[in-house]
Image (cartoon, rainbow, N blue to C red; front, side, top):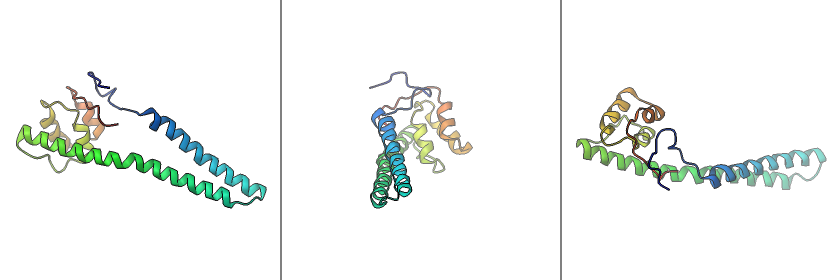
Length: 146
């Protein structure tokens, strides 16, 4: 859903199934596995099933983190290429190589009018991504990245 008034305060996007439900269920799974292992030790029961359950929960945590990080890295690469092209179209120069990917991802919200000068300031002053976003006066929305 498009947000025609996207700005610093409302630009963050959450996907409730991932960011809330799956995060909570993953935490519950891991805590249950640890509790199960402790109880197995205390009761003197076989610990193999509990250890196996803990290993499976750790594997799930790793998959959970990778499922989030891999698409973000791909999106960051695309954003870096798009913003490099936009900078080139506006200035006939590529982006300053001192800019980090995180800075470039933040700069994507700047309007064409302020983009080149903000890129220069971000590179020279090594502004944090948050400082870059706070500096933007004319917000350019991006509703594709979650």
